[in-house]
Image (cartoon, rainbow, N blue to C red; front, side, top):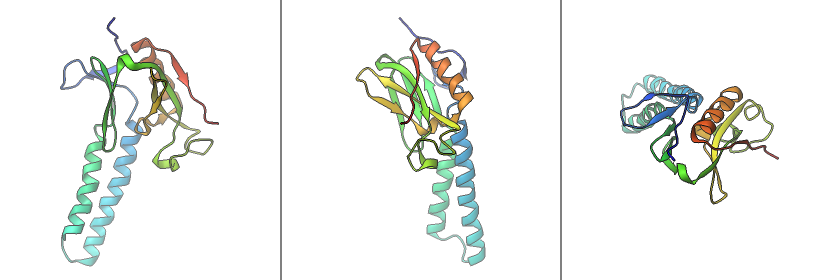
Length: 171
């Protein structure tokens, strides 16, 4: 039976692909702030040195620009038969038919050194993931969002994909 996802934003350039509302917004904002400061610091450094635009400067600033542009695409999309997750350097696809549950848990990623638990960031943010039919759980830090948005997003995905929603708690 075909599954339909609710509460998605409008269609993108590819047919039958819908962006899930919520995931990626906070990561996008953080990326623009972090890499914007990175580029600004390089520009100030280049001005202070007054040596012009040397190759290391151009390469380093290009890395910052790459990540700012890449962040515009962060998020989760539902396609005909897969869930697509776009993060910093990798785009992952998970077959919708292999997903058995939609999950959310306290954020554990770059901002927390990869650790979850009861720290300031993890207690106020969540990330979403899935449980696969193999029993494996996959979470994506790029889906970082506030607790309330996480509950709404997981509920929408759960209802849309007709799958159970679960909260995973760090111990």
